[in-house]
Image 1 (cartoon, rainbow, N blue to C red):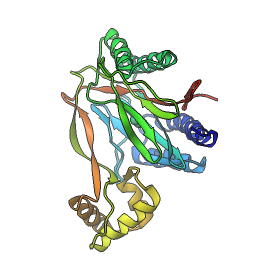
Image 2 (cartoon, protein in one colour):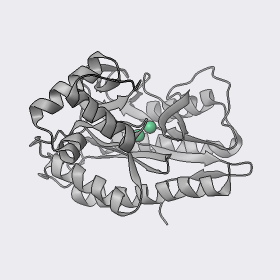
Image 3 (cartoon, rainbow, N blue to C red):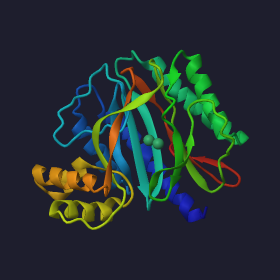
Image 4 (cartoon, rainbow, N blue to C red):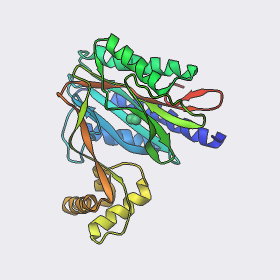
Length: 301
Ligand code: MN
Ligand code: MN
């Protein structure tokens, strides 16, 4: 990886760290999640990065892919377990990291289990582990705290303008003997729950991604596609972003998105929910591996 490219990843990571501090201050009990999410995303843009995907604010049994809609009035409750998953990018070089908030303190042990699993997985990186060994470490830490890792959610590679690139990095022990490669970027993201350790696809999330751009006849669909192709490229975007930027009526927006989904030009991300509606926590960080070191992307300083 060229020095210039490394610098882009590092800048994305630094801004993500700042956005996390900002988010922690904003996400107080009784705050409106729609207003908070828009402020966090605005913060990222002002600092000179772009959003690699809509900030995910996934509540309680929702593990991932929940983001407020533009007309949401949901407020954060003290009891809520909120996963704050943020992606930033600089010229397509993506940093991806998350943390979990619970103001009541009831779920501290669950949250700490994911944080410790992430820390231990990062400690292992210096030993050039296999992907399976990373999963084994995560599983061991989370199990030792009395919780279950979510088996069907994984970490992943990061590639230019790709927030999810191969390989999958397991959260449980596996036989995957591949190792992290020099010059590549990755995200590790343990999830833990007090349930059985699986998620299922639930409701639609309001998060979309262009899958196969091709000409569409419907005028609303065309307007959305042109805007999204130019501004978000191959990265996910939110319906509320379109609502804000395109000034289309709700009706036109819904029709346009529906048509793009029908023609498989875009795909939508379902909310990923714990199978038995058990509470989920998550911790995530990204790194790049160079020939002689591991550079953690999101950290203080
Ligand atoms: Mn993430
Ligand atoms: Mn990720």
